[in-house]
Length: 257
Ligand SMILES: [Fe+2]
Ligand SMILES: [Fe+2]
View 1 (cartoon, rainbow, N blue to C red):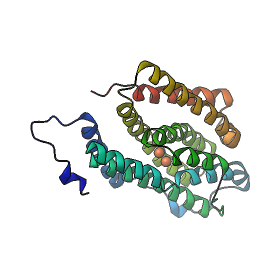
View 2 (cartoon, rainbow, N blue to C red; view 1 turned 90 degrees about the vertical axis):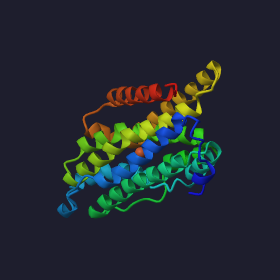
View 3 (cartoon, rainbow, N blue to C red; view 1 turned 90 degrees about the horizontal axis):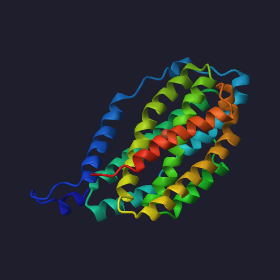
């Protein structure tokens, strides 16, 4: 990236923490590609008709959500990298999106293996894409991280809801990837929000919680059957989701130093 030459720091200037973290995340995503778990695709079709009825619409919805090309996020990240002279962040975001697309590809392959088509549109996904589209980097990440936290809750439930060895393996890989995703996005929010006033911070986290609150209801409405099949009622889902949210918010609130 041409930014690299233009943004060389003087050796006397301390490298900002945000740049150090960008480099570390870029290294992480680069390494992660080399250490993917095996998925026993050769097992072929495993789902019973009952399984198909119970989980197919839900997996179709998440497959669609994972498949975003993230063009708007990439554009915002590029602008952020240019203004902060942090080219590694832009490269890390591109690798992050590639991971999400890998999740989408694996879920699509699983659906195909079981004779279930992928879908092109679903209203929760359209709402999330709409919210991200007009936003700057911070709002874009704030919306995205809401879906990432939900993914941390959903994939373990999906894994518990199925006997498919293939789907369990696909979930293993996604679960392994999603926790670092949440950390990556929350850290950047902490950097972007670090100079906010007390009132600004209060309003920001009230809005972030409101978005998560609404998302939890939508997720339960659309994917409740998967959670119930995994032995989770609404209260367990709600409790787990908010526990994960609070961990994420604590990272967002961490002062970068
Ligand atoms: Fe994902
Ligand atoms: Fe993710």
